[in-house]
Length: 100
Length: 480
Image 1 (tube, rainbow over the protein chains, first blue to last red):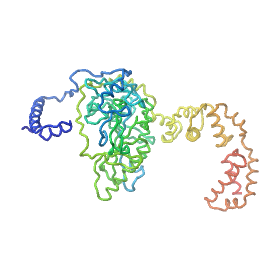
Image 2 (tube, one colour):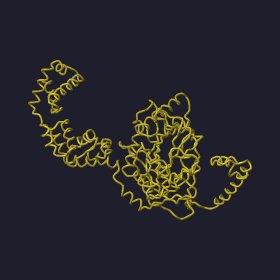
Image 3 (cartoon, one colour):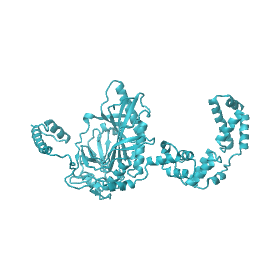
Image 4 (cartoon, helix red, strand yellow):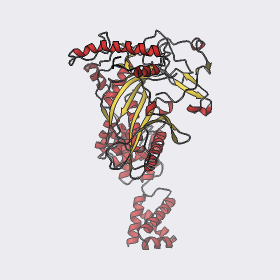
C-alpha cells in the first residue's frame, strides 16, 4: 500500500461524507484513491511556477445574471414532496448543535 | 492600541475579533431569481435552486458582486480575482448539503475600518457566500440541545451575504460595539445592506480571548454565536471574558470552543470543541466561473460611492475645529450636511453641534441652515438664553420661520439688567441663610447655593433670565 493516502484517511473522508464502507471497500478505495493521487503526482515533474492554478476547465470569467425576479415554486407542490411538514415548513429530526 | 479600553477584569486584557455576516440588498437571491425578501410567509420565496433540487445550476447575481465590491472599497480592501468554493456539511438549513462560499480566493482581501476616535481596525477579508435557510427548534423550550424536532423555512436560503472577517484588534465590549456600529453605518451608507440586526440581516460572531495585561501572546479563543443585538454583543463579551479569566485563575486551561450565547440566561454554552469542529472539505465550485473585476469596473464602482462616515466625520471635525469623535453623533444622525452649511454661514460650531446632539434627536423638520444660523447668532449675542433658544429651535423645527420674530412673539425679550438685579436682590433678602451659606461656604457649598439662587431666578422670571448673567451677578454681589 502506498503512503499517499492511508486507510484511516479514507475512513475519515467516508465518515465526513456520511458513507458507510465495509472493510473490503475501505481497502479497495484506499488503493484506487492512491492510484489517482499517483497519477496527479505526475504534475510534480513539471515546472509550474509561472502558472496560475486552474479554477475551472472553461476559459470564462464574470458570468453574471441580471438581478431580476424569476418564477418561484408553488409551495404546496414543493411541500407535498417533503417527508414531513408542519406549519408550511419542512419538518426534520432534531438538530444537534447549530449550523456553521 | 491597548490600555485605553476599560478592563472587564482588572489586570486582564480582552481581545476580540468579529466576523460579521450582512445580507446584501439585492432584489433576488445570489444564484437564482427567487426574491430576496425578509418576512414573507414560510417557503414562499423559493425555487428549485434555493431548494437544491437535483439538476439545478447556480448563476451568479451580478448585482451581488457589485455590492460586494462596494463593501470592499468602503473597507479599504484589495478587490481581487476570486473563486467560489463548496463548503460541505450535512445540516438541513442547506438542502444541497453544501454552502457556496469563497475560501482561499475571496473577492476582497485585506483592508481596514476607522472608528470614530480615529483608531483603525484591521479587516482580514470580506467574501461572498449564500445564506442558509432558517431552522426553528420546536419542543424543549426552543433550546437547541433539547429540541423535539426542527422546522425549516428556505426563504433565506441563497440570499447573498458578505462575510467581513475582522482582525483581533478590538479590546473590550465598547470597542466591539463601536466597530459593529461603524460597519453598519458604512453598509447602510453605501446601500449594500439594511444592517438590521433585529431582522438578522446583519449577524455577528465574536471571537474572544483573554491575556494578562502586558502579555504579547494571544490566549486561546472561543467563538460566540447567536448574538442578535449590540446589547447582547457587549453582554456576551463581558460574560465570556469573565468565564475565561475565572478558568485561568483557577489554574485551568481554556479549550478552543464554539459557544452559544443565551440571551435570557445571560451566559454562553458550549456548542462544540475544536476536535468536533466541522471539516468542510472545501473545493472549487465547478458550476461557477471565477470573478475577475476589471480595473474599469472597480473604478466605476469607486466613483459611485457616497462620502463615507469616516470622511464625513473628518470633514465636519475640520470645519468645526474639533476631534473626529466630537463629530460622530451628528454624522451618525445624518445631520452633518446641515451642520456644515450652518458653520459655513458663520454660526458658532460648538453651539451648532450642541443643538444637533441634544435638541434635534428627533429630526430637523423645517429648520434650515439660514434660520439655524440666525438663531445661534441671537443666542451667542446674548439676546436669547440657552433655554429660550431651545424653545425657538423647537418652533423652527415644527413650523419654520424667522427666529427673531418667533422669539419676540414668545415674549423672549432679553431681560433688562436692572430688572434682573432687582429680582436677585429681592431673592437675597428673602433667603438670608442661603445667601450667608453662599458667601461664607467653601467651593462646593458656593456652587450648591448658586444653583439654588439661579433656580429661584428662573422660577421668578419663568426662564427668561440668562443663567450665565445670573451667575455673574451672584459672583459680583458676593464679592462686594
